[in-house]
Image 1 (tube, rainbow over the protein chains, first blue to last red):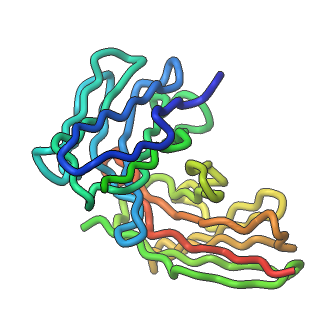
Image 2 (image 1 turned 135 degrees about the horizontal axis):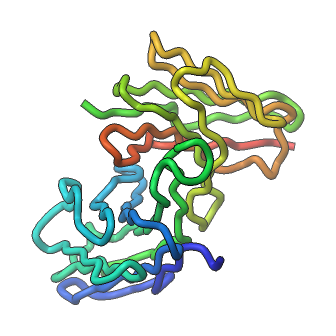
Length: 119
Length: 109
C-alpha cells in the first residue's frame, strides 16, 4: 500500500488566491482527518469524516475553509481566499474502523503533509 | 474539556534514557497513543496503551499510565541520535484524536 497520499507537497501562493489541498486515504479506511500544524498552535484537528460524511468540523477556523469527501478515495481541503496566517503544514490522516486490526485501537496513518506558504 | 499537555523540549546524551511526560484530561479515552514525527515528515504511530493497563513495554520503549493522575509517560532506553524527533501523546475523546503540543527530543552524541 502506498499509504496516505497528499498533494501538493509544497505550495507558495499570494494572499487572496484559492488553495486546494488533496488527499487520497488508504484503501479500506473509512475515516479521514485533516490537521493543521504550526509552531504557535501545534497540531490542530480541522475536520474529520466517517464513511465520507463530515462528523465534526468544529476545528475549521473560518468560512474561508471548506472540506469535501466526494468518495471513499479522495478528499479536498480548500481555502478561499487565502491569508498569510493560513501558512502551515496541513496533514491528512486515515483510519480503519476501530475493532478491525490491532485490538480496537484507533490508529491513524498520516500523509507526509502539504506545506502551504501564503505571501 | 479536551486538553493534552506536554513539555516542549528534552535534551539527552546518546546512550542515556529519555522520559517524555504527558497529562491529559479525558478519562473516557480507551487508548492513549504516542506518535513520532521526524523532520519534514508526517506523524507515525510509535505505540499505544489500553486504558486498563499500567505499563506496556515494546523493545526500547516503555509506556507508563497513571489513570488516577491522568499522566502518561514514554521512556526510551539507550537513546540514539536516530531517536531525535518530536513526540506527541494523544487521546481520543469522542472518536477524534487530540494531540499534545509535542516534545522535541534532541539527542547529543
